[in-house]
Length: 446
Image (tube, rainbow, N blue to C red):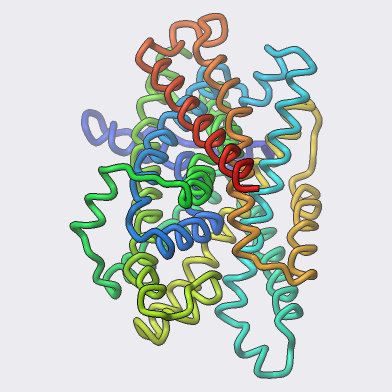
């Protein structure tokens, strides 16, 4: 992560009692919201629209379970970073043999590339949906317009990354603003769709899965429990630790007290941010289910691309629906692409113990997305495939995280309790089981 700047200092509030706790807690809000952006990135748009269109409300339970797992995973990542003062990749480098460290790094880089591909494509699509029609009307081809959109995405992400040069709180508030915009956009979509709430509630609570829905279920899982932010969250908590070490936080008398207090605040941060992301994801599925799921039964052409979803929303629900859909996608792509670049930097610096300029990381990771755009490949198919890749990369992040946070030699008195260990084992087992089911399905249908 970029070095901490003087503008990052956080002064302890003066009032005592409840007001002190509330004001201080708000000063710790941010890391989980930055991480939550990855849970509502363009890959989620693709997976959720596909799931809602093909299977209606029936996969909403996947989002609920994925969110519960995401909250546990993000808490463990934040706890590892807060207690040890080091990121997950740095802890892997310290505690694991070289061959295992290299294997984990390769898996993390694959996840980061897949993530950045989805996020960059999503932002470019957002630009295209908002401004593409005007350019197409002036004789530009779709590929050229998408390339222009990719260039605009690159510029905006560089500007987002520049926020951190003025202090990590500037970037956190910028990301929170994007999350709020996405949430407002989908609140508008739900208001316009008028979904079947009873059916949506039933499928949120009652799991159902069949052979044809496994692929989408795994992609929704991969789009929700994101491996790159498992690494990133342990880094996002570091600036406040450095502030405490410089003596600018006096809310705790010693390191252990500070870390215990920080963990309580971060847990609240995670609960609020992750549940907000879950509601937005659920709204995506509900919107698709309420709008597109009946097309096949009515003999209409199914919605198979994000562009088709945008084009169809206007005639069905009015121009406002299509516009807010595009705005949400653009905000999702820009914010998540910024977070993806930060995660990639944490991964390469932590595993390899090198300094890597974040702007160089951005330039390198746009190459696959530019290639996809230039070849005219279907962005939706690429987005969904990238989410499946992320699901297969998850165990390489989760198993080391669980192993490290279980060990008293690493965590001291903050090592996981028996209940947390069991929950961690269940989480990893569910992810592995879904991946095995998908492999089995692919093998038997070949």
